[in-house]
Length: 128
Ligand code: HEM
Image (cartoon, rainbow, N blue to C red; front, top):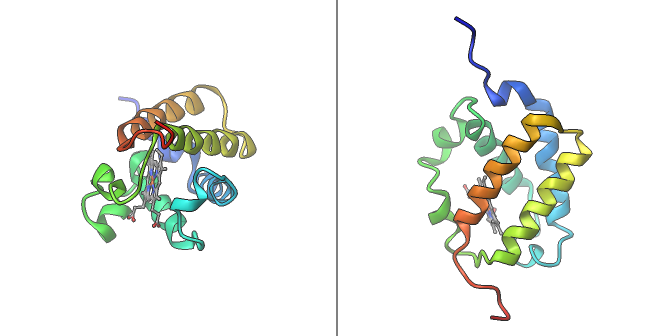
């Protein structure tokens, strides 16, 4: 039988970590996202690397250190509006361009993030 393809192995740790670092450099400069994130994103990026590793089928290093992900619950202290979800996804899409992620892998990964980001929305846009 053929070995199953694990997305984490397909992207590789190095490229995944680079993607996340670039992503947070964009978050830090995004007017819609900046206000809800800490000024120093080092720890946020470290946790996101752990989370994405297991999200893509790699070792469960997020859960080992932080327990069950419960991502929606962990986002409850922050107002995740539809506009902010869109901004988050745009930062990710630009970061994917910069690390040269393309083809089917990028499409499938991005669509999964779109679903997760929409699931995280917990407040209406602020001008509504
Ligand atoms: C943490 C915002 C979507 C994964 C956070 C934090 C904020 C945030 C403000 C806290 C940062 C900190 O204090 O260190 C958002 C917004 C999103 C979004 C506006 C738009 C929809 C996502 C998605 C994922 C994700 C789609 C996963 C696929 C995480 C992880 C953490 C985190 C793993 C760290 C949790 C921890 O503290 O252990 N996010 N997020 N987020 N977010 Fe999001």
